[in-house]
Length: 110
Length: 120
Image (tube, rainbow over all chains, first blue to last red; front, top):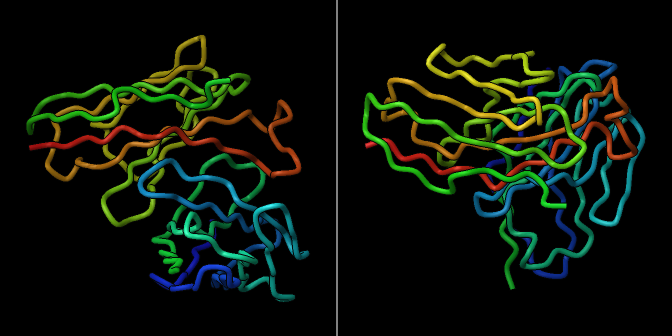
């Protein structure tokens, strides 16, 4: 599985959009980009995933660059409850294991 | 539906001892994966069980072993505990892709709350 690089931490004001970047320059054509988050040592929680098209669901939007070497997770209106560590993961769809990096600690401030 | 459950919640052991952690998967799931998460780091894949067999393994020594039961629940055993084994141990369950485990949310793994192991 390809390796990912994320900034260790980011701050965001409550109510503003949080944009979390991820670099995955060695991604293969059949690898998907997944985002999970982990709130205060609970189990990681699925947010969104995509292959090459931008994706949106009730939680977030995922923007993947055309060359697929990087992506951005967007939380449109961050709340205090979005304070968590966010992990960007790339994986082949048919494989079941995830390789987590160190993630980005998002601090949402009032 | 209870989701993924793990027991115990917390555990304190002494170096050299052995420990067994338990996981019950979400209803309808047949694969169980185990992860170790040291403080301040992301989860690291230990191994995965499917049909009562170890199917994939990460870079962990043989001191780490596991088992899956016919009801899909699983145990993680760690022998000869070291101080460095202190971590949050996470269990994740899923439905094998060959049995339709890929949905519009991709291949889903649901994580349990974890077991906090402290080795002194």
